Amino acid sequence: MSKKIIKSAYDLLEDSIIYFEGKPVGTMAAMDPSFPAAENYSECFIRDFVPCALVFLADGKTDIVRNFLETVLSLRTSERTISGHEIQPGVMPASFTVLKDKNGKEQLKADFGERAIGRVAPVDSMMWWMILLYVYVQVTGDKAFAHQPSFQYALQQILHLCLKDTFEVSPALLVPDASSMIDRRMGIYGYPLEIQSLFYGTLRIMDYLLLEPTVVDRRSTDKRRASDNKTALTETAEVRQEALKNYVREYYWLDLKRLNEIHRFKTEEFGESSTNVLNIYPESIPDWLPNWLPTDSGYMVGNVGVGRMDFRFFSLGNLLSIIFNLASHKQSEQIMKLFERRWPDLVGDMPIKIIFPAMEGKEWQIRTGSDPKNMAWSYQNGGNWPTLLWPFVAAALKTGRGDLAERAFEISMNRLPGDKWPEYYDGRAGRLVGRRANINQTWSAAALILSEKLLDNPSLLNLLPE
Ligand code: GLC
Image (cartoon, rainbow, N blue to C red; front, side, top):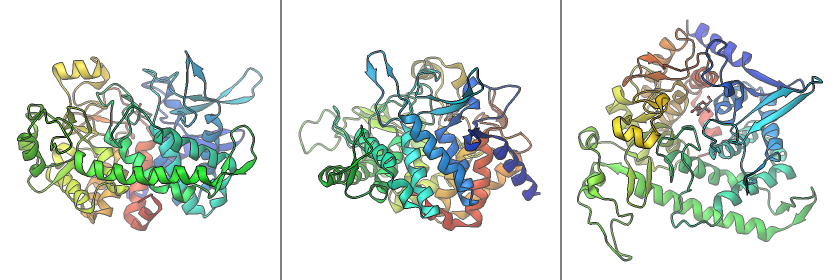
């Protein structure tokens, strides 16, 4: 039975492959002929390709991943200038597609956010691209691939972009709303956890990927010696990595002890010795939280900033913080414990809940702009997403909770193929297929295959940045 299910997941994955000039370069986000929720689901999204790529790499099909990495890199240079500002050179597109011109000649067309619903620029794409490059090099041993001048230049641009001085004091990365997996307005502008986890993941692997001591000039492909340049960049990155880790472990972490501290926080403190440095008001602790937070577990909150702690639980950010070691060992164990203790809320009938809890009423109106697709307990506002199974399985295995990984995997196996691989599920427990979900969503199928592979061979985890 399970073989048949995995085979049907593979069929979907294979059918979704996009070709450019005869070469496989990526996968379509969904293959739903009757009800595509949006036109761009036929495109290859960078983040959606990640679980697919990991499956391909684990199966020794390295070509498609190599082509993908090169294709996305080539698209980077097609960045546009829009209404008076330049899209930063390190930015990579959210998605791309292959079009045919009137002579039948194929062309790549990227979306840097200028076509996407809501015009959002993806910040996570460049980070996922870099992480995928790292895994590709790990699997193939082909370091020379990453050492090509064009790759080195892109890596440096990404780092420059993330490390450059802004108006910020915090080591966390400041981004607009909707710039990662949650790509609609959901009140996650600022310092969302998912971006901090990905940022940390990229900082961890930068040294491995960057070639010492050559830097590549933008206008020519000549290499020139610039060891000072590279050293300055890596030094800044190392300091930032450490600062980010300490900052997230201290200010994002929430357990009962910390909640008690926040509850009794002094406010309006001035000076270097203040304890409530971000001036969080205890009145901002939401009603649902004190009774919901178990005594023996904890999690990273969704976002922090001045006078702001977003207490919602975001699964992907938490799981990636475990996978990339942004969370400490103890914190990682406690996050997995939270999944166990609050299983009906965070896993329920379909792994895994994207955010808990959902926003309702006025809060939904104000923070989403009354987005009907993101009604409470639907889609990105508290829906359950099958693709989140793979980071859950990875994080569970990493913390020695193979039992939780198995349990979630079984639930997915029992439902996903029968429901035809939906994109997301609705309802508090995720019992309903999402109201406007595509069926045949590629990363839902890829996540199941990848999870099975991780369960069979946990050493695959070593390929990810840690
Ligand atoms: C939705 C998701 C986004 C995903 C895209 C394609 O917009 O929020 O994360 O990349 O669909 O599947």
